[in-house]
Length: 131
Image: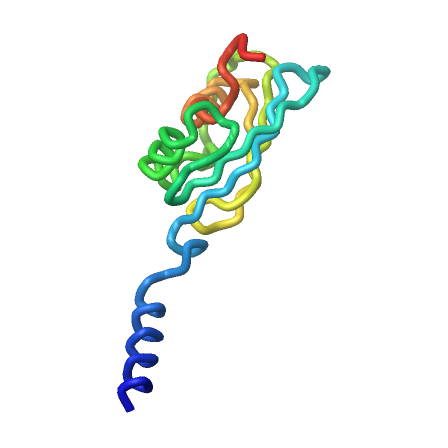
């Protein structure tokens, strides 16, 4: 009888706490290109009890992504007027799991809106001049 009640309590506790994937898991793969003809650089980030990855400062990156929440990769609304300022040829593709949801994002610097979006997550990308 006690074993049965214990199992019911454990099952109820598991149901009350979401799994890592639904609770906000972050596991990203980033393909960065400085120019269209440059070799791609692949970076990774996994946020958990021990953040790991090849992005600059994985632990700080995880904290910052958690702080930014869904706004980190939010696209520019289609009716937004963007300044026509060219920020350079760099591009990045970010895929994986972000806050428990699948993510596929392309980042560029073709205008002011894209630059703003890039700057929100620039901490994930190679630093200028870094090999």
